[in-house]
Image 1 (cartoon, helix red, strand yellow):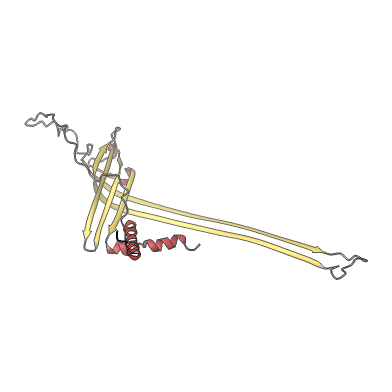
Image 2 (cartoon, one colour; image 1 turned 90 degrees about the horizontal axis):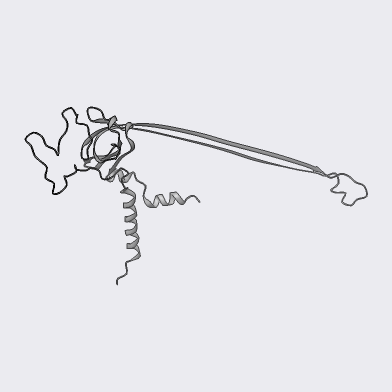
Amino acid sequence: MAKIPTKLLLVLMCAGLSACAINQPAIVHQPMTARPLADAAGTAQPVGSIYQQANFRPLFEDRRARFVGDTLTIFISEKTAANKKSGASAERTGAITASVPVIKGLPGKTFQGAEVGASSSNKFDGKGQAAASNDFTGTLTVTVIEVLTNGNLLVSGEKQIAMSQGSEFIRFSGIVNPVTVSASNTVTSTQVADARIEYRANGYIDEAQTMGWLARFFNNVLPF
């Protein structure tokens, strides 16, 4: 069996690591979309000229999403801000002084009458500050992928935009309470539970802004 050269093996490992660093897994609920549930096999549904049992909706009911496969428009309006500041200081000082008395008749007259002094000090001062802000607005239509037992809707969807330099995509998922859905079949992202919003891009422009795996390795281990 031929032996793979060491240099070639290192190149393949670097390529694999760099690919893992760029292609990150999605954080939203899967799948991204779902089709309406099909009728059970072998059960014939009566077909009438007006009444269709499979697609029946009462006349007084609006077109709000409530079944698997229905669509729902999400108004993304996320604004967050956080600021943290901390500080600590400590200081300690000490001093000591001693002298040797003069005693007649004892040897070592050179040291008699000498004074010895010592002092020490210790000071610590630490400060820290962090700030973060986020502003994300947009509109995205998602699909109901599951209806929970309590009637809440698990929705998920994405929007992709392809350009010459790459592609950008927005992904959204979360749990929607049907009560919060408006008559126009819309809901704001602030009313969605367990909301997961993802905005990413791929292409050489995005890759240029990503730190390489080797640089991240040395950034974690250095300085010692």
